[in-house]
Length: 101
Length: 261
Image 1 (tube, rainbow over the protein chains, first blue to last red):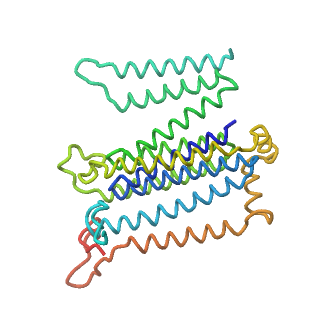
Image 2 (cartoon, helix red, strand yellow):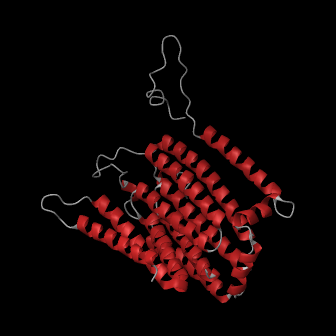
């Protein structure tokens, strides 16, 4: 069906795109969306690794827990983003640079 | 050829024809782009499905190529689109392609859980937060779907970020290709015989019985509850109490004049 190596490369590319978006953008919400894209890459990778180990289900179980953690992080992260927006009135990540060297 | 394939070809051709008819300019009315996009997407989807059926046993590789290209291009658009709402919509496309990819790899429950949780809950949360955190964007064109913000107009350090991201991807891809994996015929056979009653039953056996990890789901539930309480506590506003000389404002105005925190 699906070759595990090809699926792992797709997961790696998705992760790399998430890293790219996280390093490049300034909008707080797009920063969080980039971390969600990273989660997608990791999730696909875990399923591919489970497939490469002879159809083991542990990859899918790990992916399920990655899904739970992603939901938790999305909820809490967006609550913090809303709070940060109320403080400074902007979604710019550069508004919080007072500790920058 | 089977009759269903022929009828599928007719339907796909009809959809392509409709899309083309809508796209052609007709006098003064320029043609509504949203309907064109929907019909073109339906037509392309029908053609992809048709080609997958035609290819027979090689249809698996065709579907995998299309889905992974879709996931990667949509992911690229997520991180490069200037407007946050469009990023969220392209992320929806990433989630759907990823769900289809893991479905092809045999993880049926995970695919359904991805669509329900990610596309159904997390994305809706993101869209709500984008709606609530809208700044007045009167200066930049039409602000119907969330304008591109001024500070986000140009990417910061694009060369360094692209270098870092793709050195990472190249390293990981190199490691993946160097290592040898288990033979694939054995993998699909093991998947088929390890789950005689289906993927969901096998997952349930692994998670809920003593041979699996029964406590982990309870811990996950507690974690979700703690996160919910935390999110409510973090994002609440202190509203002024109503007393005799300052009655509470009408509904819709209550939170508007409260101080931020």
